Image (tube, rainbow, N blue to C red; front, side, top):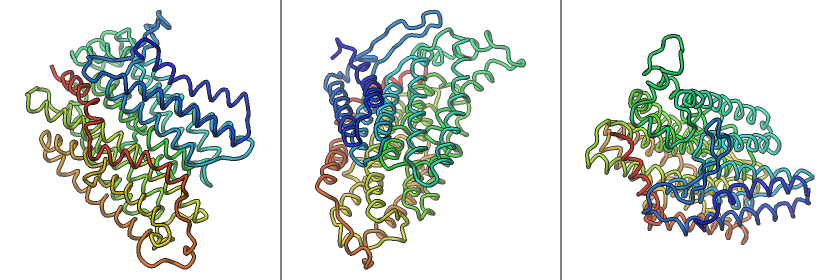
Length: 517
């Protein structure tokens, strides 16, 4: 596939399919089948990228570069390495999963499925673009359909939730755009790799000071100000505490398939930005504010776990749990940049922690999407109820539902043998070597997570069965088949994590080599 624009094809195919749905306006059932078919084609294309990917090759693969706006140094430039390949695969897998997990009827069904396909195109473009101008267009393309999906098909509080989501994300995007415009004025390029090279050589501050006059601010402070603007854009998208308040309401209000995509794929945009853009371009600035960044990561881990523990609404509980799991990714990313000197032992630990971060991104996307899928079916079967106290004893009447929910929950918990374990293990392995106190302070997040997840299983599926749930339906055959792939991957990665790590590790090693001189 290296001889064809494979990345461009799978990125723009959902966009073209969505436009086709808007023009065609088929009935709801046909619109869903069409969307599933196109998402399946994209999944096959992502599988082709996976098959043709050479993990030992240096640099980006399947790269395509076309001159777009030469006067501004803007190229259409895409490519993938091990990190972006894993996220492209995750996105391509989750979109058909989410479409099949729920249905929308009515005259606007074609718009609903078109927006989901637009969202997929935005996600794929974000994970493959190598030029900021091109990348930012896809970053924003993912925001617009997500806003309308929540606004038009969400629950009772969809208006305020969608508005809060849009405002938070737009503020972050504007701050990030201003930061990159400053970088362009100083360097004359939007190319991520060129900017990373300048950042790793410590030249950004001097270049910014030479081109931008801002009240006599010195080079170091000016570079730090630009860094903070870019940081805000990614922190809101993850989201990291205290930029997280838009997430619980949005996840709880959005339709189940949309929540699956928000937590499974869209939240990874922020972590990906930290890992692939912020860290390589601003290593010096990351180290300059390291204590603050570590406190934010630890707060994201521990405070979100406490917040999840305090919830009675199941969707809000798992929304806070999602923040908690992504907090481990932030901790690993920041710790990888903590030291300004290189030793062989520390490079090994940095590689371990970053491998854990990438695997945690994939694993969280898989398990969180599966959990929200099951929660959506629980809510649907119960007539809209989703409070923990509303249920009890469901294992007696829905054993398959209980079993699959248990597998996904234990995967989220990090049980050995399931996919969640290896990512968290690698993060903590590297974290304890790089900063023992940071790792120790993050451990309570694991313990609190175990408590509220086990409490959820106990109260919803065990204990006495209330009479009103005596006819609660178990999963249908179709629903069981839909969960075969995500549940199977949870076991596969948990038992044989090398299927993912052998693709990621060479990329991570090259990233570690660029962190310090």
